[in-house]
Amino acid sequence: MRETPDFSAIADAISKDWHSISRPEQLPPPGAWFGWVYCAGRGAGKTRSASEWVRLMVESGQGRRIALVGATAADVRDTMVQGESGLLAVSPDWNRPTYEPSKRKLTWPNGVEALCFSSEEPERLRGPQFDCAWVDELCAFWEPQSTWDMLSFCLRLGTRPRVVVTTTPKPIKLLKELMNRPDFVVTRGKTADNAANLAPTFLKTVTERYSGTRIGRAELDGELIEELEGALWSRTLLERCRIAPADRPVLQRIVVAVDPAVTAGEDSDETGIVVAGVGTDGIGYVLEDASGRFTPTEWARRAVALFHRYGADRICAEENNGGLMVEETIRAVDPNVSYKGVHASRGKIVRAEPISALYEQGKIRHVGAFPALEDQLSSYAPGTRKSPDRLDAMVWALSELFVGLSTSGVIDYYRQLAANPETFAPAEPSFGYAFTPPGRGRLVRFIVPEGHSTVMLMSGATLSPDAEGVIACPETDAAALRVQGWREVPPIIEGEALP
Image 1 (cartoon, rainbow, N blue to C red):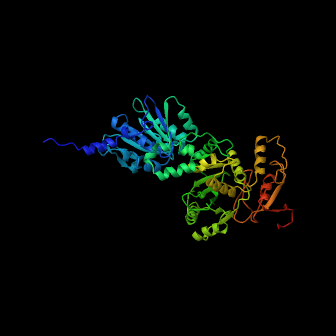
Image 2 (cartoon, rainbow, N blue to C red):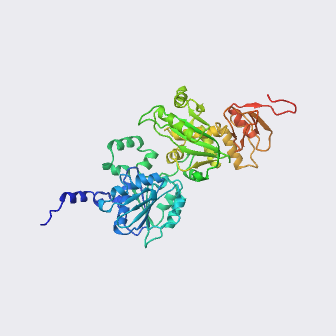
């Protein structure tokens, strides 16, 4: 007897057929391209598009060895493999791969294999070879160029290796180079294009909040926004200062800085929480950005946890809005942490400029990638209205580590001196202290305030207090310490005791 077809199953299969439900820009473009860059806003369907492309390569036999490369190992696992639009979700029952997390490997019934990699460890791409690759969120990579270089050497199997790059665009050098290559095709998309598959409340909230802004044009509309004129940090500068965690030296001092939000709620500002340290090489290191939207108890717990995890010397928090409540909230979690309240008496730009200058001088490094923080840094310029909470926390952390950075006059002096070291004739800075170029003046002695085991000077030198808690520094560094209110002591005269 002839069986009756299961029409409901057939209808269900047709309704889930990717070519039937996808939008035109989500399908692989025609042509003999080597690379396909799909630049689109958040939630535009990039992940689903790439997963379906990998599925096509597997089922058509065009791909036998596939590389999956994400920003972090967790991103590869949670988004590319196990995510709602990942490879396991889009694969039909008859051809669903077996995932072995410990081996970082997926294996399909027809023998096709995919290996997982992350930009955290680009060297793992040495050795294997592939005929296909999917690179997800390239602009969030820790080391985009080195990871891409290692992957490029691996794409050597078959007659026509191919790679798909899905990312929300940022003006990093590598992305712009790929988009201009003749063997690459570029597809663009917007968050709104995928409205049918997004929660209406999400779309309404992000559109109302970010539509028309620089971050909205990039994160929602998928535009490649070039460097903001007047921004204190550039993408190029930030990429130049990035290092791998293994390259970080021993740290002399570590602080956790907090910029608390005034309110707590889904529409409130974020609480900036940044960990930074200064190394034995005199360089400042940004170690972690743990910012987010938290209740006061939540951000206090997070700050204290970071304090203990990193073995930090101090938590410093801005008290302009919360006053004593900020310290009380932290001490309610741990009454024994070393704490310092800081107050913003100058505008954000004035506070941020000295830190920006340290980046320009090569005195700051980012240990890894901090996409949200770096977005704020590269988009903040005079006239910016939105409060950059992560940026503020980072500025407080580095200001605490690098003594005497609250005056832009000092920074202007060093910028001019660096540009013309032989001919620069210093004028009296705006805050009223004269400078003598390095090496040409007397040493000035100061009593180091309690809590400073080392002192980082504007010149980059690091000093430790002597047994009496005193340091001696050149006049050029002394001016910044005077501004901070440090107590100056007279030079040593033979037979005279210290005060």
